[in-house]
Image (cartoon, rainbow, N blue to C red; front, top):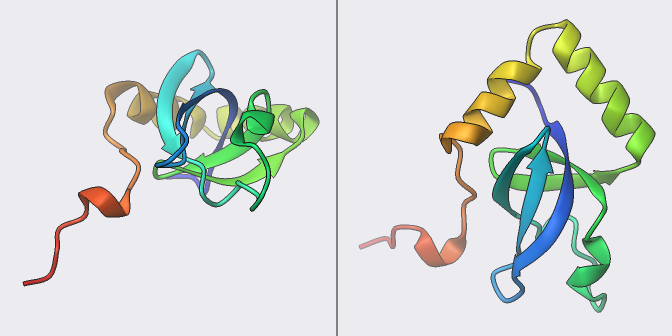
Length: 104
């Protein structure tokens, strides 16, 4: 599994939960954007931004050139297909504190 796969934020799904829809090579998934949201800024400003996605989280904002270069490298080393398939099948879901099990 790679450290992150580039995707483009296409919509804000839930502002309160900080969730966005991200397109990764034609596959759309809901990811947590808490790591890339800036305090005081409208989350809508992230629409169109490229981000590195790992285990359901947008970990950092990157530019389009870096996104293309990363996808190219991941494809060359055979990692892109597995990551995209994991997103397609939903085997990775974003963690959100409201759905976490509570300690007894």
